[in-house]
Amino acid sequence: MAAIMFQGTGSDVGKSVLVAGLCRALANRGLTVRPFKPQNMSNNAAVTSDGGEIGRAQALQAVAARVPPHTDMNPVLLKPQADRTSQLIVHGKVRGTLGSGNYREGRGALIQDVLESFRRLEAQCDIVVVEGAGSPAEINLRSGDIANMGFACAADVPVVLIGDIDRGGVIAAIVGTRAVIDAADAAMIHGFIINKFRGDPALFEDGYRMIEDRSGWRGFGVVPWLRPTVRLPSEDAVALEKAGPRADGRLLVACPILPRISNFDDLDPLKLEPGVALVMVPPGSPIPAEAALVVLPGSKATIADMTALRAEGWDVDILAHHRRGGAILGLCGGYQMLGRTIADPLGLEGPPARIDGLGLLAIDTRLSPVKALRQVRGRALDAGFSGYEMHMGETDGPGTDRPLATFDDGRRDGAISADGIVMGSYVHGLLNDTGFRTALLARIGVEGGGRDHAADVDAALDEIAAELERHLDIDGLLAIARERKDPAP
Image (cartoon, rainbow, N blue to C red):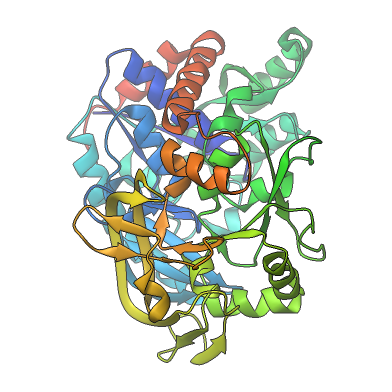
């Protein structure tokens, strides 16, 4: 069965985007494709068609492959909720909370879960396109590895290494990887790709040949800087460090960057609105007084993030914004923060605690061990929407008598203040829908929302696929993928 794995010389070298683009390129060639990532670490997740959760990048890659996202595409997901602890998701469901030490000791046992998912996927398609995590050069993590060479060797999947030339040192990064990994792992690598090149690729021909000569691996091409990437959903917190500048003539939407922020890709559709300037507010900066809308995003640890919000003085900024008549939208954990109280009596996100929220909605939240994971459809602000729920809280109180949304099955969600300027919901993906986004923007005086976000993403994937067809030897990549004849034992 055909399979190929893409690993990187480091994090943020563009693995996720290249895998998505290749999934689309191969699908456009008429192949049935499945994306796969053995282990991911991210608080940006999506709910799958089989009622579990996977990393947001793998959900996007499923869209690229034109198939519904499934938990087998990302069998192990780690969701950081404190500096040294993460929630462990296996096959889409919570399996427990792990510290950094006991995860490193126990991760090797997860290889069977990983291989089970991989076997199911490869039985469904012509080719599985696999994404690694971090770098195989992190040889201190090789023992028990399931994310990179540990998986590649166990499943006998050929590897191509991706290097990021934009950050500099790409020759050393690729050749250095060859130097530090052991011979068995090096034998799994069949070549390399240079990613994020700006300018004339002819200027790098000598460097390209030097990498081939010094590593013994062949090159599969040089990929230019892919501008359509800005229209794709954000995968991880690296994107928050690259927030764009404000622009004159547009209304400001501000979102504070909380320590355990999650699913901030919910805001991506706002970045593409011509009448909106989305500003991600870093710690140490006030929420701009001129903001027309403040969005409180999802959180993996709501009580800790509420405490951090107060420590930054953002609670004062938000309450002042409200007194001025500014609109506020809370999503999932942000919705919980808008309420009167948040309680975690079982210590699900840390020590048992109960704290006050912002008090802008008459609701109270109690965290519970049962995690809601479901795709939903309904109406909010008199507009249709589709999205998904992913939360461990139960919220009630008189504010819920005025729900923001009503699902097609009759359930009600969220709350909206009597004056209509404070809104909260558990639904992720609300802003993806044109109707809801148009109605929300109208409340802050912006004529917009006409862009079809799903169509924007789909068009961006086709543009990236076309660029990869021009700049990569995809036939060569397919050839090494097809050399692997037998499924993993």
